[in-house]
Amino acid sequence: MAQLNAQEFTDLITRLVEQLGLAQFHAKLMKANALVSRKRPADASALATQLYQLSAGLRRQHAARYAVEMLWQEMLSSKMDEEHSATVEALAEGVNACLSERLEVVPDKRSDLLAALSAYYRALAASSGEETAYLEMLLRASTSVAQFLRQHKDELSAAVEESVAATDEETEG
Picture 1 (cartoon, rainbow, N blue to C red):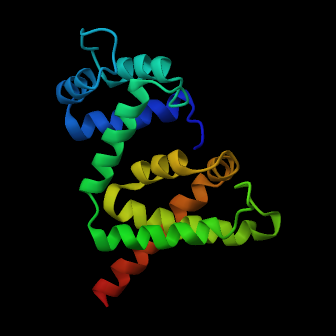
Picture 2 (cartoon, rainbow, N blue to C red):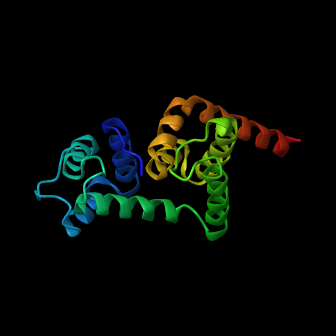
C-alpha cells in the first residue's frame, strides 16, 4: 500500500464525511475505538488531521487506520455491483502485468501501465467519481505505482474526459 500525503489523506476523509456526514462518521469512528477524544471536531479537515496523526497516514497499525479503511471500502462497495467489481478486478490484472515481482514499474512497460491505469481509473470513476477513483488507486498502489500515478494524474483525468466525450457522441449518434 502506498503512503498518502497529508493532503491526499484529508481528501480521503473529506469524501467519507461527504458520504456519511460528519456526525455519523465520527460516531462510527468512536464505536471502533479509533479516536482518543469523544469531542467531535468542527469539520472534516480537523478530523483528518487527528486521524492522520493517529494512523500516521494509514501506515501505523492503529484502530483509526482499520476504521478508515473499513469505512472507505464500505463506501466503495456501496457504489459498485458485482459485475462492475469483477470488471475493475480484471482491469487491475492489466496494471499488475506491468509490474515486477517487487511491485515496481517495469521500465519497458510504462506506456502499457499508463493505458492499464487509465482503463482502471475510468472504470472506478464511472461508479465513484474521479477524485474517489484516484484516491482508491493511490491506496491500493505500491510505492512505485503511486509515484507514477502522481506524475500522470492529468493524463488519467484526460482519459476519463475522452471516454465521457466518446460515450456522449455514441448516445447522441
